[in-house]
Image (cartoon, rainbow, N blue to C red; front, side):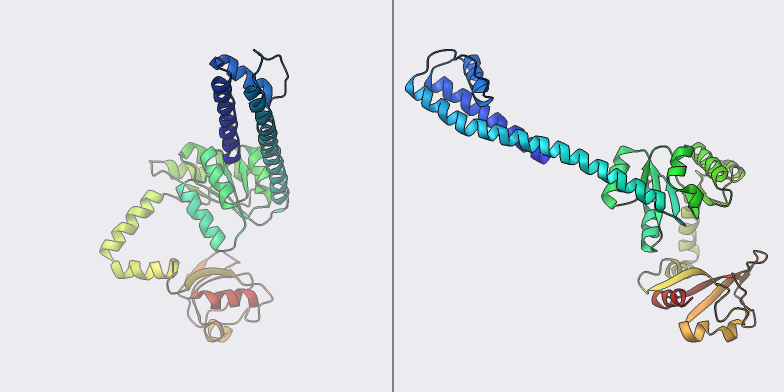
Amino acid sequence: MKKILLGLAAFILIIAFGVLGYMALEHLSFLDALYMTVITITTVGYREVAPLDPAGKIFTIVLIIVGVGFVLYVFGKFTETIVEGGLRKALGRINMDKKLANITAHYIVCGYGRIGKIICDSFRGAGRSFVVIDNNPERLAQIVHDGILFVEGEAADDENLVKAGVERAQGLVSVVSSDADNVYITLSARELNPKLLILSRASGHKGADTKLRRAGADKVISPYDIGARQMANMILRPNVDAFLDLTVGANKLGLLLEEIVIPASAPFVNCSLADSGLRRDYDVIVVAIKRKADGGMIFNPSYIVTIGPEDTIIVLGDRNNIERLEKDL
């Protein structure tokens, strides 16, 4: 756009230069001077409005040399910008479609508003693959700027969900603005992938969370309720809130609260926590264990509790130590 505007400005200056020159040297009217300038720099070659004096002829020669060459250059750049822009957009769309066709075990974020953007930032920080579905032009421009894989359109449309790889995804987060849209998105996603983990946003209106759960959402979150409770906890239990902030956010101290699925090949499968060496070798605290067999959750497990194959452990520790544990597993 900048190139186009500069080219148009230069073209207008050339026209103005020609018009003023003919009016001054040949005493032509504005319309005649404009006519002479246009037919000269466009090389059309229509007849002159009047015989030219020597000064007028010299000026015409200068206008042809300067004006015609510059006009050709400007229009060449204009065409180049249009062609390159369209080609770049087409190639970018082809590359995007190719990535969408190959992505697996990812997450789908429906809506790139304030909440959706924070979720995407968290996914990116955790190194997780994700796809955004949105149809707002301003948000789409921001998505492109942020270099995020996306699908343009309504998230409730089956075609867009399939294009985003819903059948191969691990989870879907629906955070569009209205409860009705979130219900439609949840219904469509659940039908397309019955095993998909679906987290949906509720507005806080009465009955919204119930409808979303009936539609198939595994978890329903109301940001307003969570924000209100957190603000209350900050006043009533400031030290507890500070601890939770450290364990969940943990950016300043490098701490991380993470869940890890223990593969059957892990060396400490069927061993007790005391014998697992998790605290000794990785300096992490096991906060809870979720059993694969029955889905039960054991909070603050004792040292005699054993870790079964495919159990999920929730650990608190230094980010580097947790990453080292995940790598060893």
